Every structure is written in structure tokens, then in C-alpha cells.
Image 1 (spheres, rainbow, N blue to C red):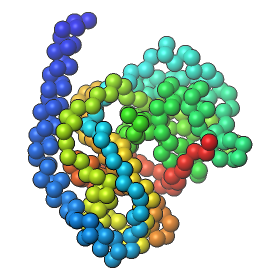
Image 2: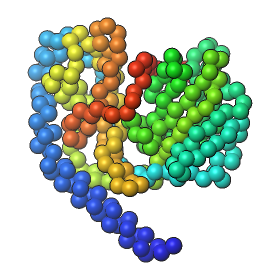
Image 3: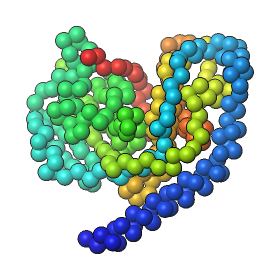
Image 4: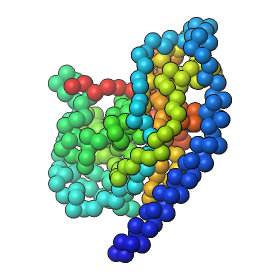
Length: 275
């Protein structure tokens, strides 16, 4: 392998990324200011008029940057230690595994419990965070984490687990990212309160709704061949008057609301795992 050529390619790629992100920041900084994040008093007035409940404590993020990563290429050798399953690798980037031994994902209380399965039967399984459980389709979606925060709806950083009527895993599909790098750190970020206020002033938060949580994560910004770039993103989870749950995602730098194009579970039921 020509390491000098490889080194040059990496330098060129990251130079392009930095130039792109800097120009993107300059171009869209005004857009972020036009998000209409108004003063605290005005936001409180809007919340009061629309009867929107928001009583969450402020989460401060001091390590929220652009992140780049490469798509993981799997090898049979690194998967040999995973027992009780038959694994097929597609395009070197996707694992499809059929379980040969029944593995329960319920604990003694009857609650969903995935940590044991993730630890024993999935490569780097604990690097993934549970996002949703669909009881009707008997599947759970997990997002890969970077610096402890989830990467929202990236096809290359997801794990999907399926089970049968006995709550025993039958198969799973996995993709993974690797070699995470943080850069371009000096950016003005929307705070948690500003993100919620932005949604309220632009009419995304419906009347009589309640903000359940605001969590940090990342969303895909761009992809260059095998390298992807992710932007800091706030996830605002809201409960509507009729009890339905909605999730909103807002780019913490650009201030734009993100709408993912992936097919989401219609009967989505956000859940927390029981210990």
C-alpha cells in the first residue's frame, strides 16, 4: 500500500470537509439567527397562549461538535467469536444474523431487556442505544452512539433486532461507523431552551402539547464516498393532547428542523429498558 498516497488523500478529503463546513457555516449563520429564537419572556408567552408545557431543566453541552466517521467494513474473522448464530455479510458493510439458539429479551418482570443480548451476541453491541420498540412488528431499533450520544436515523449506524411470539430473538441486522473525529469546534450552538423556543415560535409545537424530553445527538450532514459528516442535533420529544408521541430534530448549529426520509415505525412506542 502506498502510504504517502493514502496520507495525501486523507489530507485532501479533510481539507475539502473543512472548507465546505466553513462556507456552510458562513452562509447559514444568518439563517440560524433568523430561526426567530426570541427572548425568554416572549417564548414563555407563546407557550402560555398555546398551553404548551415545558418544565425541563437546562442541559448544557460543551463538547458538541461536527463529527466525521468512516463506514465500517466487516470481516468474517472479527465475527467468529459471536456464538449461536449464522452471519451473512452483504457489501462488506451490513450484517444479517439468524439466531440458532433462543435468546430472550425479557427479564423476570416481563419488561424488555436488551443489554445481555447486545453484550454477548452483537459486535460492539453496547455502542448502540435503544430508540424504539414496535410491539406489533416485534422489532427494536437501536442507534449507534458517538461520545455517548446517538446518531439519529443514519442507515450506516443502526441495529435492528427482531423476535418471535415468545420474545426470543430470531435475527438482527447491523451497520456500523468507525474512526470518529471531532473538528471545527468554535461554533455558536442553539441551547436546549433555544431549540424548544425555535420550534414553538415556528408553529411546530401543537396546542396543549407537553415537551417530554430534549436530548443531544447527531444527524447526517453530508457523505463523501465512505466518509460521513454529522452535525450536532437536538431531539425534542413531545406528547400531544391525544397522547400521541412526536419527535422533532433540529440542527444545533444551523437551526434547521430535520425531517428524516427513512421509513419510521408507524406504531412507534418510545421505551426505556428496565434494569
